[in-house]
Length: 385
Length: 235
Image (tube, rainbow over all chains, first blue to last red; front, side, top):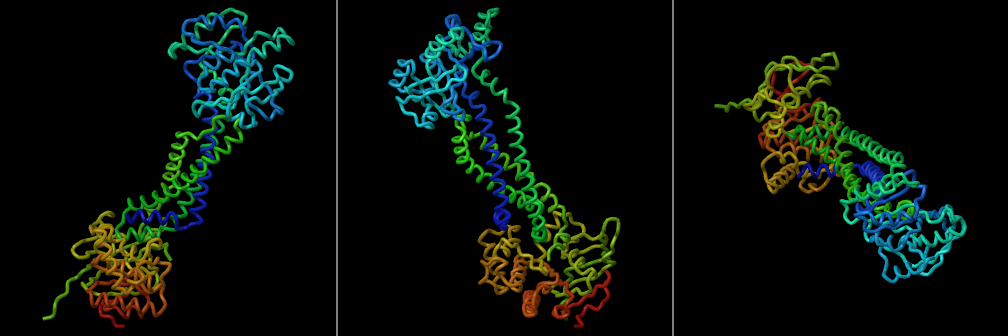
């Protein structure tokens, strides 16, 4: 009990040094937590993907389209429950910096396949009934102050011209991992408009979304879909939604790896800082440890004192850093909402924070403890005065 | 017939040297002498004469190269580090020049600290520590931290810490070396009382003749040798 009392008091005896070390650890844990959250939000789309949904795209590349006529053929394949389709629209709202994902989709089937987009029955009915209507996620509507009935114009980049829409519904996510920053409108609106301007681009879809009757049928259905369009002018590549999303993430794999490395480098740097603090602290207390040894306290007691002090400092810093992570992540997530629609500090990140703090505390204490134990009492006493 | 006092410390043919890299520096040569129970002995000598080394050896905080040191019925030169730690906890009380109190503990907690290695209960530890502080006249300062006490008061707390376990011997290394004259006199008077009234065996290293004057027996060390056989204090 007395040993615990000493180690806690030792930890905060030099308030300035302990405070600065704790601050350093807190900032490192904050940076580590935010970087880990960036990585997990990068993978949020993959995590949120359903195992009972498939994505079919052109086998050559996502930028090539598929004929609308595939819709009926896919629907007839055994194991297929619902088929929907859509295109990436790539419209710009007022200015290019106002980026958010916008798609045209076949609305009825799309909403069936994505039950996590929750719309009130009245809003859903209004959206389905209005060909120029669109729905937006709650966060997106809030960001631009859109209200039901508001007119919104997007400037087409892939499909030139100004495209006018009317907000008919604001969807809410069924759970925390649902992206609430997206913009959906009727595929028919796009198709009919471009039919007049460039008929050769009409009746083409960017992707098909397929809901299967049972998740375990996904692989068979994917194979059957691709087999159906083998040797056609537009061969298909069908994969689970998770694999499809992972394909996108893989394109930015180097960035994710760099972020991961930086997050670990931060921990290594702070480990060196804490080790230095503990080395200074132990050097100052060599006399105290020698006195305790003269009284009969042994190496185990000294080990508990030094490791305990190191852990108290690192865990206090960790706790401070974790508490700072939540408001910082909220602010960060709000500022970059359209890039990281799901920016939530995960439980896994918090566990990693604590693990990192324990690692820092223990590794920083090893060498000072070894020195304190190995020094003879007489040598330790000689350093006093 | 006069009562024959028993030897509490018997030192026989003790040698000690230090190693500085490849250099061997001899410190003590063939030291042999006894200390009787209840004695107050002062070890004097110039700097580098080996006083503190000898004190460390007979307090079990350093190891001799050769020879034996028997304290009570135990030859401490045969003990392992762990056994020595247990032995020190039960048999030796230390008083140092710079008091060496733990700065993060209050006076009462400093005195209580060695009792944590005993089987006493929390309440008993507190009672013993309070009693020790009362004996050195500091019961009114028990909740003060060392930095809130004067040098003399800190040394009194250190004395209380040294006697709280009721050790076989008290070893003091320049106990007045860092004190002003008045405080030094108080500390020496206190040690004298511990010896005369409580029968504590005290071995004190000093180079201050005024401090040595308080001891009953005086031993001189010079260049690692005991230079006198006269055990009576001529001072």
